[in-house]
Amino acid sequence: MKPNAFTVDTLISGEVRAEMARQKIGVIDLVAETSLTRNQLNDRINGRYQFSFGELDEVARVLGTSSIKIIQSARERAETQSPTTDRSAA
Image (tube, rainbow, N blue to C red; front, side, top):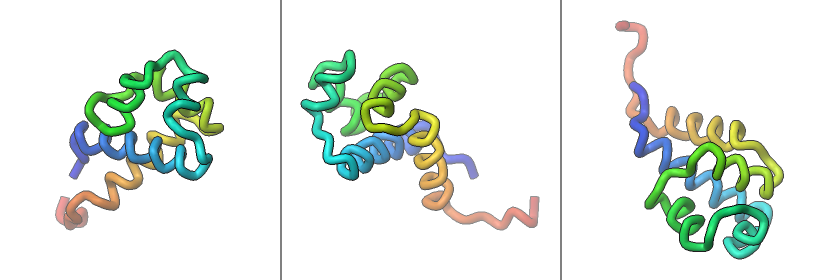
């Protein structure tokens, strides 16, 4: 079963928050290093709006990672949180 877009977007936001915590980088720090305003960044990391690819790339760069790694982590988490299905029946 494929995770829906809402779930993946929520998980991407969660991955960004987790990386911010690991790096001890706050919203103000990210705002200073990206083109996002404080409100825009808060809306995205809290899941109210999706990150665009460009925004995610900017944020990932400041966090010392890549947007691809953030998306991969979110996808992996989505797959582990999806209901299990018997794939042998397919």
